[in-house]
Length: 251
Image 1: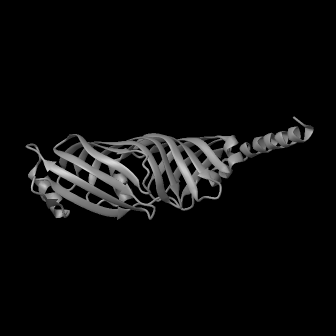
Image 2: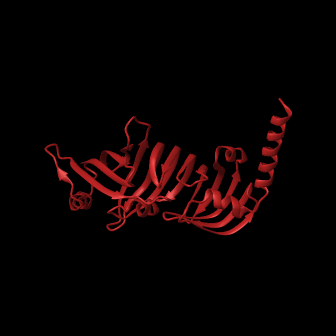
Image 3: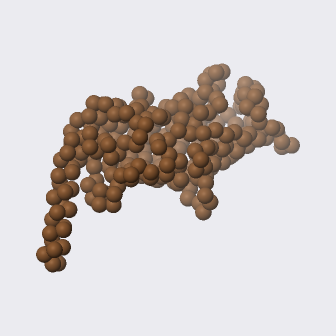
């Protein structure tokens, strides 16, 4: 290696060391997208903490990160992040483009209150329960989800208005050749059979196409609620439901 290359390499190493020793507010500026507020910062850009981080969808507390300095060479900010929620926790590898248009989350694990998921997706029904996240990869561009792989498990789901327990369900995302992001829904232990698809489009809209099959354990309040949501019953007795909405992600 020539002396010029050694000089460039040394300059890069020095720059990285200098960057990671900056205050935690610097890393927060890299990692936190617009529309998000941060308070109670402490530590350094390399290893920092925030008392709270409030996004359009979630409020996180006890947020801790460990920066990956080499990502800066790719014009990205990357860090391992751990955080608490009022009734849950999250951990993930976050990558955010320094220019803010693109980002991704890898190895996302955690538990969320189902109420917060409902608020994020603007669901037409009020549900309680837990959402367990096991997502290998989620990517977004200009605030729209453009890729997803992994599973979300919904446990102890209850329809809040009638206090009716529905059971447990699964939503699995897998890579496809199609432009939109697709997920497959199914029941795992519920009072009715569920099969359906979730479609996330790059205009930040979502679409659910579901087939609900009542069983002997399905309460009458559920079939009534499904009908009120606009589901149509087919010749086999299945309720076919189509619902649309929009989701909030950082821009």
